Length: 268
Ligand code: FES
Image (cartoon, rainbow, N blue to C red; front, top):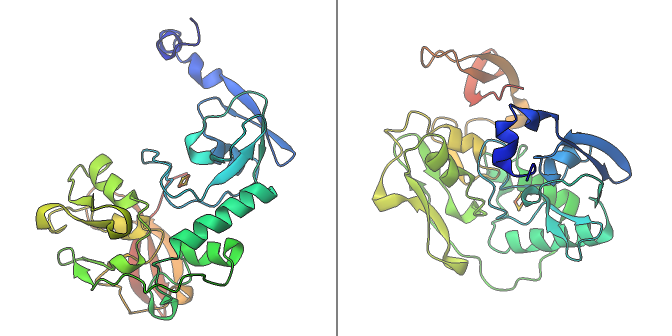
């Protein structure tokens, strides 16, 4: 039928014209019909918290932080995994959605250390921000947290697995963007860990630094920048990379007339 994806492609880009009206928390927006609910909420000005979703990576619905209620759907849904439908009504800030995020935060924090005072990500950490917004401020866990030592993933990247929340953004980056496949998820359950495949280092990956930026928490850190500066002192200056001839857009984070770190700068 005309709704089959192949039929649309044969129609010469009619795809772009197919729009869906979606109402999020009472605000109606029109978005392309391939959009996911999380992006539709963003378009409506409602920021749905998320860890594993990244617009340039595959969608895995792993972290369960982006839960919303959708009218007519009995169970709450991970908004990154659901495509919009015309006429959809989303309740992104309902009691049920907030309770689900609160429960997710409690699970994510089971093994997460309270080391924000010495963590490089503090000040730009999604886990920190969301625990202010959605966390209970309390823990029911009496069991000891699991502990790992820092590990070098080559000369540039250091991983602190204690802080990892297994969103797998970094793993997907090495598979889908750099194509180098060094990172993988090993083991199961409470033993789950992100590690390098067969002990590979990330040194031969020229894009390795991006995993530090992609990591929503302080698990992947840059050896150059670790423990050097608190991020709230830094002023981001948009500039162009001098690291290669491809003129990649980057940010230089500057303080006291010195560049402390470089970060990728998404366009648009
Ligand atoms: Fe949707 Fe992680 S952002 S499940």
